[in-house]
Image: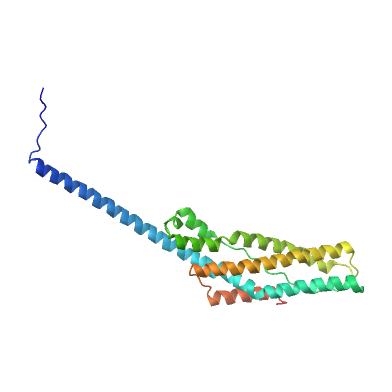
Length: 226
């Protein structure tokens, strides 16, 4: 039995040429589609980095800069509380609570980073760029937790105004313990702020001077003793 393959109307050579043209067209289309997709991811990456630059530079960054500038004032207030409590304990006399002002409570935001990760934009960044951004944002959860603890500890410290002229040993120890916790919070936020600002600079983010001055003025107004 013999099988006869149908011959193309214009011959095999012409047929092969037509197939080749089709293949080349498909490859061109696929390449163009890939270029379009790469361009879209590039645009999304730029948008994500612009949002993170704004978040770090105009929101979190000024708060970190101000923490570094005012940490000594926070520490000085805690020193006054300790001295007053210890002096009354060691020398007797009436207890006179010092005037204090709690550090303003601030949240530390990472909304732009979360959006960049969920959109897939970070997965299309270079390894170095991705590392710089993630290294800056990795401190945000710790800073939020420390800020919440600090707010709670200073809430306890404000009770110092309610102490009697001769505090009990229990009241005194409670105040000294709260002072120690607040000192730890201040030291932690100050140290973490240094590392945070280091990595924001590695991500090529700078804190605008106007944003820093505005945040510094706001916090000084809330901390009248500073």
